[in-house]
Length: 175
Image 1 (cartoon, rainbow, N blue to C red):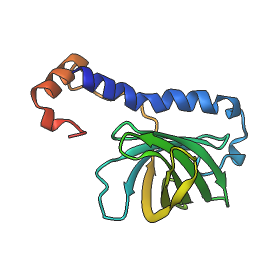
Image 2 (cartoon, one colour):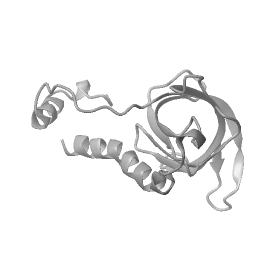
Image 3 (spheres, helix red, strand yellow):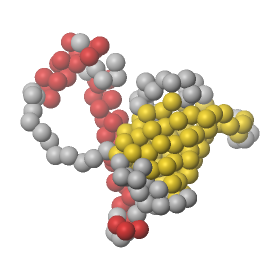
């Protein structure tokens, strides 16, 4: 149960980071905010058709970005608009399998502003020199905008939810 609570807290972490990162720019005129600004539910395909590890990514008006994937890997970076519905993103992350790596993405937001697609490259960074070891790719990222909703009709208590998750771990969203 403790790991489930930690996973739930990890899902909420981007919200706190986004509030901290975006608050200085919150007063910007809505007409000047790029179509990419917001929080997105993202699937990533590294080129083999595997999209089993979803992620959440946020784009702040100050051009910072934070991503958290299903394994808890956090990537931070910067994005720059290249047009009204296009942008480039560079993020860096660390994990125990690969060490430090950098991802560069060219993003196209759909006309309705509710989804985007991006083509990206992946580059490992040498731990001793800090130099990149060459870009590999392409991979594809697809995302849908996360919307804000109020709470709905409950089907049980939070305690009941955790009890149910403990009873059948195969039923958990992470699997």
